[in-house]
Length: 131
Image (cartoon, rainbow, N blue to C red; front, side, top):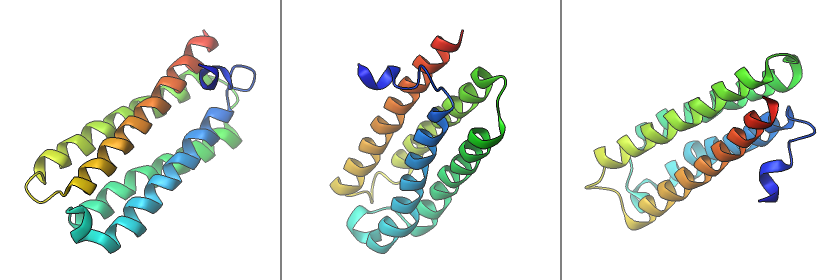
């Protein structure tokens, strides 16, 4: 897959890639979905709580992109692990709110988890190229 190798020459760009995705996720969770709580079936409090994590990830990504020049493997591994933990947290909330979640809510969260896992796969391939 071509996407997995686009960061081979400039691995720091993975932080921009991840950060833009994190900002999009934070916007969707903290702005869009909260305005359609009944449509998606998940409480605003949960959406705001989940939105905190991608905001923190985006800040981490920006910091790493601009200030980290050594040990890239370590810092990419950290964000990849954080993304995986975020997926687990999201799955936990899916189970917690399974009685109120609508089909659209399930669709959104499953799609988000798949996208984040694809990002983690790209990060994993970038890490392997740094070895």
